[in-house]
Length: 73
Image (cartoon, rainbow, N blue to C red; front, side, top):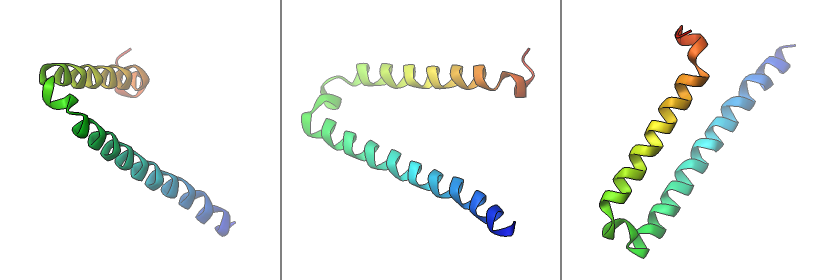
């Protein structure tokens, strides 16, 4: 029983660490590609607008998925 608990605790921690590493890897990869292409430097307003849109969508999705826990019925 103890071995099962240890396994069930370690698997989510390992998968979370791998997911975090994947996010950092892909973010740095795409940042490098955009930098080489010069896309970010030529359209700063477009990049800011896209970043703001992503943040708004993430915030709204958080509120929708967590509304029961946030007591916003």
